[in-house]
Image (tube, rainbow, N blue to C red):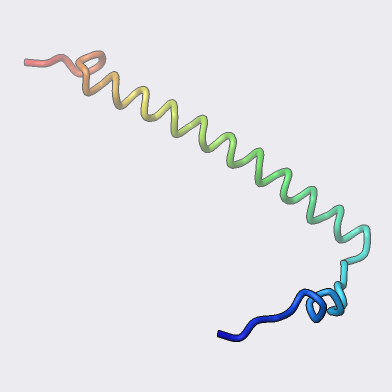
Length: 62
């Protein structure tokens, strides 16, 4: 297996986007985090409702 030494890796240039692009990326990531949080809340609610229905809370057992 071939490897890359730390010295070679350290010599590689790292190109960063301009500050406006970095801010746009950060804003998008923040929006995605919020969307994910909301989806997780909806999933938890759906699971609670389903669990309640299956335990006879909504659908009566015969």
